[in-house]
Amino acid sequence: MTTATRYSWQGEFTPDMAASFDADGFLILEAFASLDSCADLMAQSRRIIDGFDAEQNKVVFSAAGQSHAATEYFINSAGNISCFLEKGAVDENGNLIKDKHQAINKIGHALHDLDPVFAEFSRQPDLALVARGVGFHDPRLLQSMVICKQPFIGGEVNPHQDSTFLYTEPQTCVGFWFALEDATIENGCMWAAPGAHRSELRQRFARGNDGMMEMTTLSDAPMENADVPLDVPAGSLILLHGRLPHSSPENNSGRSRYAYALHLVDGTADYPASNWLQRADDFPTKGFVA
Ligand SMILES: O=C(O)CCC(=O)C(=O)O
Image (cartoon, rainbow, N blue to C red; front, side):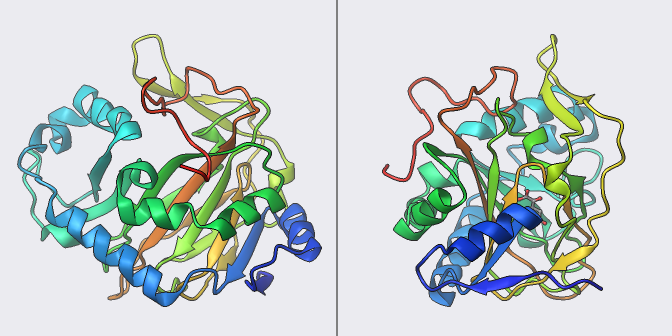
């Protein structure tokens, strides 16, 4: 099995790191975040889940709510902090059938602006340095998520390219993915297809005329296999180019695999009104200086 190249973060974005990101479409920076800050983000995630009222959102998660209610809940999450459930965590009426803390798949999508703990973490000066290093001119913090990958129930993330969902012209999306816990082959670490960011974007997820989201095929070329594991210790940052095919399998182990993912786009690029994520006029996307 090919092993991914890794760097240890020493507070400086080096030409070697830039070249590695350019060649592979990803970059692993181990020891980027302290274990204390990972623990703080985990604890804050648990507080958010404590405050989540599954009963209030029953219709969204019910079998009947799979269309409009679920789409509206998702689209509204562009400007709030919403919890999304694992498949199999509710019955057909939307009632939780698992413990709440085991049932959350992810939390999103404006943690970086609305939650003080995530906001501070997301705007640490070293992140601005890294964003400059990978070529951002006007970095905008667009989307944030905690991905829980709970033990035994944590679902698969299918192979995808992030620019499918966060599209700009030209394409500028880069994912900043932080392992809050050790991410291993056993608990569902990320996998990627090194170098495949050089090929084209395959799909675009955009608003249709009825306001519902639709996936459009841009290219029929098969996606390269994401067959290299990006297994990393807690505190690592993995940068993911917006066209890099990546995925993560189910977590069949007894250990969770919490991660925090922050997605940036460049403010110099055109941001289409058809993207799912639209911020209200009085809640614009911001850079590293809040
Ligand atoms: O954390 C995962 O398993 C998937 C995350 C992902 O695909 C992303 O942040 O783009």
